[in-house]
Amino acid sequence: MSTRSAIVIGGGISGPVTATALHRAGIDVTVFEAYPGPAYGIGANLALAPNGTAALEIIGAADAVRAAANANITSSGMSVGGKRIEMPTLQNVEPLRVIDRPVLHQVLHDNAVAAGVNFEYNRRLVDIEEHADSVTAVFADGSTATAEVLIGADGIHSTVRALVDPKAPGPTYLRMLSFGAYLDQVIDLPPEAMTFAFGKRAYYLYWAMPDGRMCWGANLPHEQYLSLTAARSIPNEQWLRTLRDVYADDTPGAEIARATTAGQLQVVGALHIMPPVPHWYRGRIALTGDAVHAPSNTSGQGASMAIESAIELARCLRDIDDPAMAFATYEALRRPRVEAIAARVAKINNTKAAGPVARKAMQLVMPLAFKHMNVEKMMGHEQRFRIDWEATVRPAVAPVG
Image 1 (cartoon, rainbow, N blue to C red):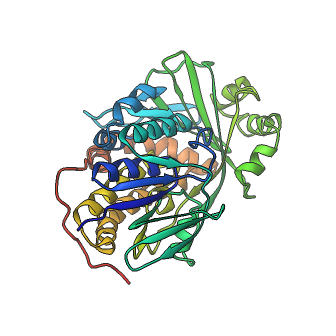
Image 2 (cartoon, one colour; image 1 turned 180 degrees about the vertical axis):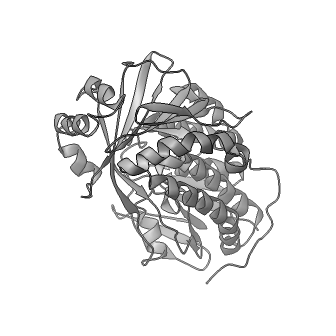
Image 3 (tube, helix red, strand yellow; image 1 turned 45 degrees about the horizontal axis):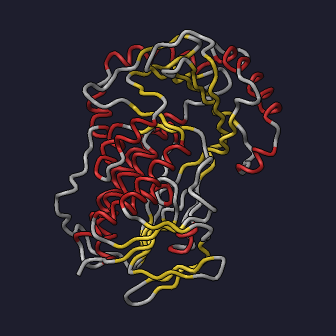
């Protein structure tokens, strides 16, 4: 008999998607979230690639996400030394949907509740007890919950990951802090276009919004790691002075930074990636989303990969009776895809703090490289990927351990 009950730890992006997909698969599921309510107000904006939006069709959330998006990006370019170079564009795909992370959290939460998923708040996981045919979550308030399987969808600083494997690697700090802001357009911007700018001292990006505003994001090099709380304890005025200094010699970075006010600036915090995680599951416990794979924000695929994995995990538990076999098959389906994307983006990250010689080389090489780029070969397999919910999942590999 297939799995009948599940606990999901984490109520951000992958948690509600996992739970909704499990519910659709006929599995009774409850989401336990450490915060006192849906995880609103954490982070700035993110982009959903066409494959991520397509995956949301399966759980009925795609239209709500499209409606809540604050920009739809159909083209992009790179800027070095103030000169914008148009990048090749994949044809016949849905736009990149830019959405505030808190808004996406709410949309996915509300969609899950409407589908019949239960949520419980103020439930911070501290331990897991494994049994022959079930698993029990132990929370900081002394309460417990038991189900046949437990899914860790609790983000890049996952508690479940450490309980599955105490030797598992943690997130890698990229030595950059992220900032963002919405402001009135201070420069002429093409509609539905995003620009990735390589400044003299730091990387940034910007795009126009349909309502007449613009958005920009900054990746500030910062050797010292700061938690989100520590970064936000520093006054915005101080961060803004730093950003204006860092981008002072950039076009249009200097103008954008000068136009940004302390009230508009959002401190997003340290940028991380997840290195390859050796163990995606153990027994009746599995990881999904950022808890097990979190590519750089440069990929534009972080949220989409989390959504895809959540749905594939639900399919495996629906069709494969043994949880360990289901989790092994899920890992076999997902690991090659997410690690290939992470490897591609790692090369791009190395250019974010390019020196003067490297920037000059980029100015010379990029137009030629873009002219001869086979964008279909490079990006088609990422963005055209679709999950066939109706297809039966067959066991792929034997479980490990």
